[in-house]
Length: 328
Ligand code: SF4
Ligand code: SF4
Image 1 (cartoon, rainbow, N blue to C red):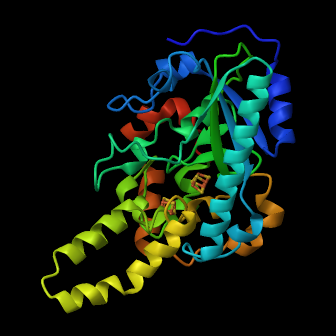
Image 2 (image 1 turned 30 degrees about the vertical axis):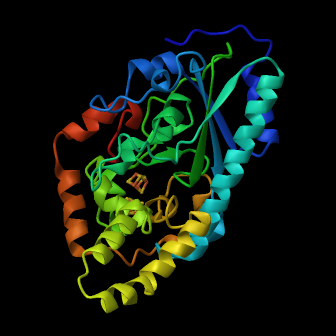
């Protein structure tokens, strides 16, 4: 178990430095509390699973995504994929700058590559989301940055779900933040994430992660392994060559050059979420209409609103969703 290490640094200094390096939001979670409450009991990935030395605090860094990209309506617009990829790189650089600044000040710190998937835990076709080394969204809630929404996306007061997260572990004895108790999500009476989802993956306080993955990582490992399998099992050699020279090869090649479409992808649910200080002036007019809305989706939302009790999925994630008060 991680123990705190004495330091001359304060949490205010760490947060100010992270903002100076370019973070828009910074929060600090207590690693011991995260160890105590793993988000997934079947696959508990907590700070102590990464390090037993430097995980007593989890510094959560957030950068807002570009407003202009959220105003682009198509879920698969390359400007979104590419812009988000650049943001991830910027976030990793600022996290690394913070690591070295903390270490120069006597506080060892560890960058967690949370966008990467642990290959030892990867199960093809099953919930790749669950295999990140540490859930940055749950860490962000513990660090007081926001709460989880209807589909478990992190929602912040400032930018709604329109943030990309980075994680740094340290055992420096700096004060952690407290999590919010009330849910920021407006629930199924809002349901805009469900209406907009091209995969129809948004459920009643849950998400079909496998369905979501095919959109939020459209050219990711699943796509590539299916594609390579289809080539290897093709008996006609001319067809094999045609496939190799086809569009899919080109898509994989381009995506692998920068990671866009692999570690970035769909975020329609974030673009249309009405929570966030940025929404009213910078987004509402442009994202208000949801072309993906269908009568079936509206019916499902009506049924959720009519439910007398909250579902088991809510209860399981209640700690991070927060206390939900329906509008009516
Ligand atoms: S990321 Fe895209 S596919 Fe996944 S839940 Fe959000 S809108 Fe749906
Ligand atoms: S779009 Fe509405 S229901 Fe979905 S996460 Fe945001 S506030 Fe919650």
